[in-house]
Amino acid sequence: MINKKLHLIPFLIITVFLFISCAKSKENKLVGRWHLVDYNNPGSTDTTTWEFKADGTLWITQDTTHIDTASYDFQTHSMRYYVEIVGLGPTQSDDDWDGSYHVDKLTKDVLMLQCQDPFLRWEFTK
Image 1 (tube, one colour):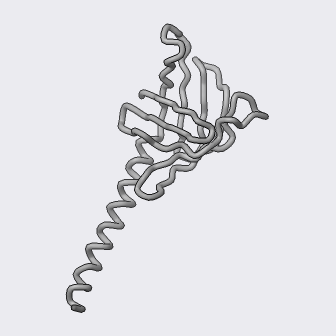
Image 2 (image 1 turned 180 degrees about the horizontal axis):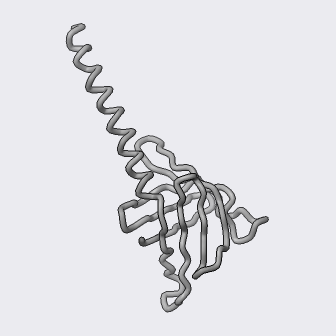
Image 3 (image 1 turned 60 degrees about the horizontal axis):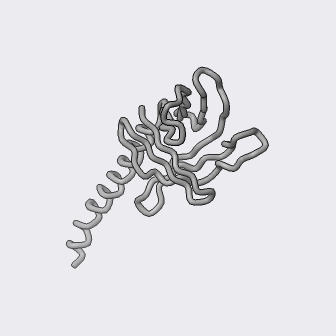
């Protein structure tokens, strides 16, 4: 019985290590410039870019104009990935867009974030 428990310990250590490594890999995919897909104005030539920096800051630019800065934290809860964003809003005094965004999809080319409160969905391409 004790021998079986001893075999279980390395398995648990490896599982925890793989879970942590996978989360870091997802976080590394998040860092970089993401172009917002604007479904409301399909003919628009404006380009909105969200840049997630490695230091936990988020810069938003429209065309070449810096329009907002926020901070973010990449988190995992119950095997799901979230991006907690603080300080994001249409104006400096309006933080309507702050929240915990569930990462619906994150690949090297596509990012989909969804927040329940307030309900917002953002889709990006690299």
